[in-house]
Amino acid sequence: TVSLAVDLGGTKTLVALVEGRDVLDSRAVPTDRSAGPEAWLSAIAEVAEAWQGRYRGIGITVTGLVSGGLWRPLNPETLALPDIGFPLEERAEALLGRSVTLCNDAQAAAWGEYVFGAGKGRDMVFLTISTGIGAGIVFQGRLLTGRLGLAGHAGQLVDMASEADAPIEDCSSGRWIARHAGTTDARAAFEKADTRSTEAIALSARRVARLCRNVQFLLAPEVILIGGGVGLAAGYLPLLQGALSDLDDIRRPHLERAILGGDAGIIGIAALASASVE
Ligand code: ADP
Ligand code: BMX
Image (cartoon, rainbow, N blue to C red):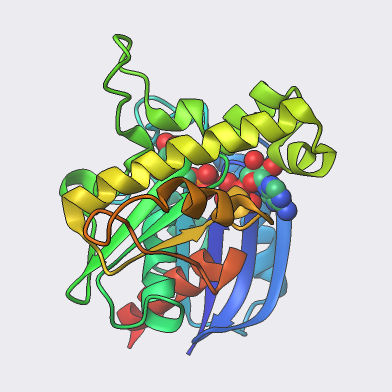
C-alpha cells in the first residue's frame, strides 16, 4: 500500500508518497526552525492535500522524543519545541483527517534500513549524524523504542569528562561542525574544506568514532549503519573507520553506509504506517 510519509528533521522536512522501498513522489522543504509545530504541520497538510486519494496510511517521523502521541523536545539545539510537548497525534489527525503512525526519526530510519536497506536481518544500530545525532536500534527483528520512546538517543550520551553533563551531540553534530568551522551550515564546511572546516569535520568524526566504540561495548551489533546529511557526506565514513582501524576484531565496531541514504526515514515510517493499516 502507498503511504504518505513525512520525515521532519532539524534542517529539512521530506514529504513523500512511499510504497515499500520505492519513493513515488517527494517534496523537500527546509524546516523553518522559528515557525513551530502548527506551521510545520500546515506545510505538510498542504502537500498532502495535493496528493489526496493517492495514499492510504500516514506516517510521520520527527526529530525529538515521541510517545503516547506526544512530541517532546530533548535537545533544543537540534529543534526547539514547546517544553510541555506538542500533541502531534491529535493535531496531525485533525489536519490530515485520518489516523497517523508516529515515531522518532532515527528509529524510523533504522527500521527502514532493517527492512529494505543495509541492515536486512542483522542486529543493527543506525546512527544519524545530521543536525543533531540520533540512533535507532533493531535487535532480533524488533525496533527498540524503550520507555517514553527514549531508546537510541545516542546523541544525548554525556561526555564523561565534562562536569556540565554536555550531550555529545553538542560537540560533534552538524550544528557543531558549522559553529566550529564558522560556516552557515555543515554542508558549507564540507564544500569550503579550508583548514578550519577540515579540522572541525575531523574532530567531529573522532568523537563520533568514540561513540561507536561505546555502542560496540553496550550492544555489540553486527553492524552500525551510518546515515544523516553529515554521516553520508563524502569522506566522513572513512574518517570514522580510520579512527577505529587500530582496534582488534572484538572491540572494533563494524561500520557501513546506510544504503537508503536520505530516504531511510520516510521508507521506515511508511513501513510502520502500512503495517498499521493492513
Ligand atoms: P535533518 O537533520 O533535517 O534530518 P539531514 O540529515 O540532511 O537533515 O542533516 C542536516 C545536516 O547535514 C546539516 O548540518 C547539513 O548542513 C548537513 N548536510 C546536508 N547535506 C550535506 C552534504 N551534502 N554534505 C555535508 N553536509 C551535509
Ligand atoms: C537529537 C534529538 C533526537 C534526534 C536526533 C537526530 C531532538 C529535537 N532531537 O538532538 O530525537 O533523533 O537529534 O535528529 O531532541 P536530526 O534532526 O538531526 O535528524
